[in-house]
Amino acid sequence: MTSDLPPAPVPRRALEVALYATDLDTCAAFYADVIGLERGPAVEGRHVFFHLGEDMLLLFNPDASEVPTDNPALPVPPHGARGAGHLCLAAERDEIAAWTRRLRAAGVEIEAEFDWPNGARSIYCRDPAGNSLEFAEPRLWARG
Image (cartoon, rainbow, N blue to C red; front, side, top):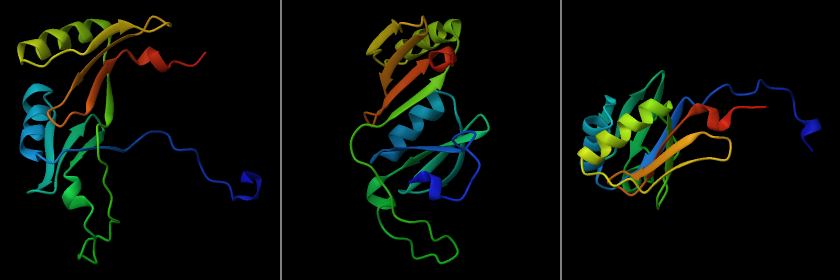
């Protein structure tokens, strides 16, 4: 089937990742104050975006993002998700230890912390919307 498709370049990275939260203010405060991400554009009650290195974390209220836009200049299709999403942030082992201390000091429960079979370390917690947030060594996904 794919042999009939015209060629296209393979994507190199995710430019945006999206999580969903009905209480945007509380969840946005977590990503700004606890995680330390720089806020980007926001629309009250609809979304708050954050700079994540060269990329963006998009935090949407699904109740608002499921509504079709009435702006013909920005014809973004409706979208949204319900239930817990997942975001994994890259961190080296010593950084993960620092994140563990910071999260605990902020009153955030660490749900799990362990080494994967390849030796890479991960910790997991939840943001205020219930999304799973992981910090993991990049070698978790190293090829070869």
